[in-house]
Length: 197
Figure (cartoon, rainbow, N blue to C red):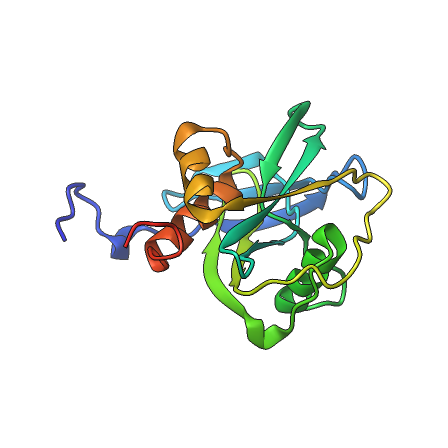
């Protein structure tokens, strides 16, 4: 590995938080204001970011080698999007159990903890949010339960052959960041599932 910049990792320092104030407009969208001291001693008193909370996503593969996707309206963009099932980490619930719960609630697939394999974690915007998305893959997923949707959810469940899902990702038909990342990571980790081997 070559370090092209003059500053090495040893010289990069974390900011020091001098003050934290909760300025959230609602419990649904938390916002914090930090006063921070930079490594060079400069003080910034208006650094705003959102500690949104962590997210789970599950890439479920059926016995027919189909990926389970959800199609739903996302009001932030005002778009109907295709993505993997998932949601926020539930209160007083582990990341893994939240993934199990979200899979059942959104698409009616009940799985156990030992069936979920980690695909790692990603973050979408570490500058302005404190949110990590944890991904899992489950094989031989069965539609063995019922959807239990929240009042704001209207979800269409779609199954699609894994190689076609990869094509959708390449063509930009699946373009939600965390879904796209976990689909591509799964394709690298399990190329035979996605027709790459």
